[in-house]
Length: 244
Ligand SMILES: NC(=O)c1ccc[n+]([C@@H]2O[C@H](COP(=O)([O-])OP(=O)(O)OC[C@H]3O[C@@H](n4cnc5c(N)ncnc54)[C@H](OP(=O)(O)O)[C@@H]3O)[C@@H](O)[C@H]2O)c1
Image (cartoon, rainbow, N blue to C red; front, side, top):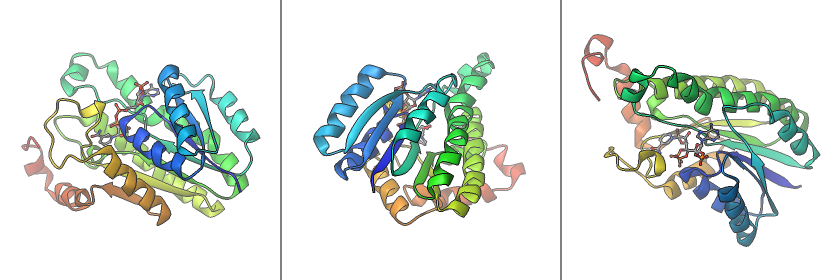
């Protein structure tokens, strides 16, 4: 049976590493994002690596007007459909404090844009009764922190959305995996000094292993499950005075 992956935010550093591995496994690739020139280059690379096909799609998390057309195209593609979500933006918290109107964009990039698209894709995947959805949240969504609580709120919202979607689609044989990375060395974290940093390639390996095992919530690196478990249980009177 044909198998295809729809990648939202295919130009992301983490997505590129995942795409290279999926292409080498021979899947068909629908590469969705804003930068068509970059996407065409990634598509060409996919074909060289052995992808069954590679097609570029326009996807903007802040503009839902073409999502219906994307779904129509995907309906025509036979076989198993899978989707992975990598869109997101992390402006500095100080910039958001200075301009609260930025909140809407942060929520659109990580939550409302991808959730709207997945909500439209869900019936198609339910009909086919197979496939997987992998969505990127973040450890930042596990507890609101001084340094990035708007980004964290967007990721928490997306993780909750994926939890509900997992509950719904699991009944039709579609698996939904929530990915919670800690810091990863990509353009998003360029120039930042962050603890336990890892590489996109290592995260991509974790994602593919997680999908193979039908993991529900994947922390990558693994140590973050423990770290966030501890951070989550710090009593609020203490936590609100901390700057971690
Ligand atoms: N790097 C980390 O430490 C880290 C940690 C935890 C979670 N994450 C999450 O992992 C995902 C991938 O991030 P990354 O680290 O690979 O960073 P990245 O390279 O900066 O990728 C961000 C991606 O989001 C896309 N994007 C942003 N706004 C968009 C919009 N309105 N519509 C469509 N696409 C949009 C970007 O597209 P353009 O190329 O068009 O800008 C880019 O493909 C993100 O959701 C991020 O929040 C990252």
